[in-house]
Length: 410
Image (cartoon, rainbow, N blue to C red; front, side, top):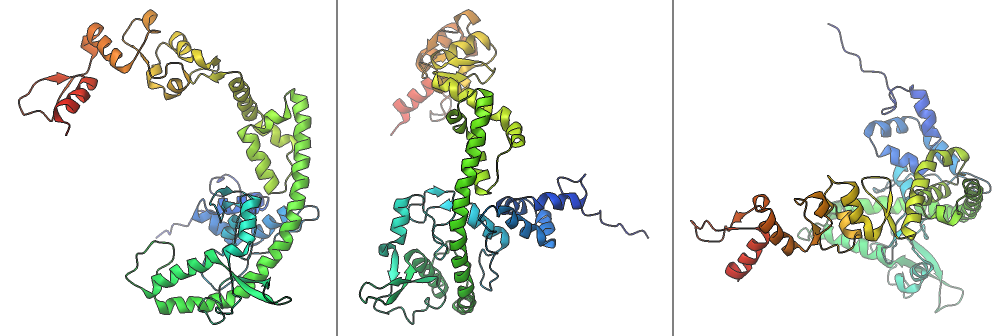
């Protein structure tokens, strides 16, 4: 009996490539790119986990100039999002502002309390005493959260030279909700935390207590690294801007207009995040897309918009006429894009009329009357389901709405 052997390991979507080539490609990725690839399938995740050097090379790729690689992902006993891919996403993937929930794209502003800030204003609020619990009276010394919850020491205002213990008010309230869910089985399960009994939660507290010094040291290392990273990021963004300035001169386009294109914005953001330089090869790969977006941008500044059925740019006020004259088989009434841009966007053309009469516009009610009078055989009619059985009276769509409101509306 012949036993079927499993196919040799391959690089998934790049199945025609040898495994070694796939690993080399992964080693050239940044940590955030690698984390996104690991989320695409279990096989890619298994491939990355079997070769630990892939993650090490990804972090080395961030190293540039005076900026060293980021501190390694901490190995802790506590459950949570402490995997290598989650660590990279937390660092480089952005997230909502801790104070106002507005989206952010940069590094966290506080690695101990895991805070993000979208503006200097929110950053100042998150660093203020109003958003932190200051244990001045020492009433939290023996609290159930004190041994494991993230904390820092702040200069005391009441006793000069002394330090007060500080907790994040957000994290403290979150721990309270988790405790309430464990001790009160009847509490509503929101899915914010894993279901645990009080005994299971105490075991988790013990693991968190062991893990807290490791996470605190990692946060301290990240704070020192982030300062060097931000300085190097400014240098990289300046170099990329100078490169795009030379490209703009060669292409006879304005740099400020190119930087407003959505694809160019993403390129600048991604290459700045990964401390990578935009090269001529990168520009040539995205050149066609960026120039097409630039053409749309320049046309919109002149009061024009691209026709969805051809490559022409037409003035907004005349885009419906262009549709009728140049695209006879397309219905401008069924194109939301045309209805939003064209003049008299509440009016419609009659597609049953001859081509020469289509520029005439009607309101919805007038269009129905026009179709009843001139194209009666094309008008869809229906009976009223609210009328008594046996009623054979038929209505057009608009007439049915008016009939229901007049006869059956309570």
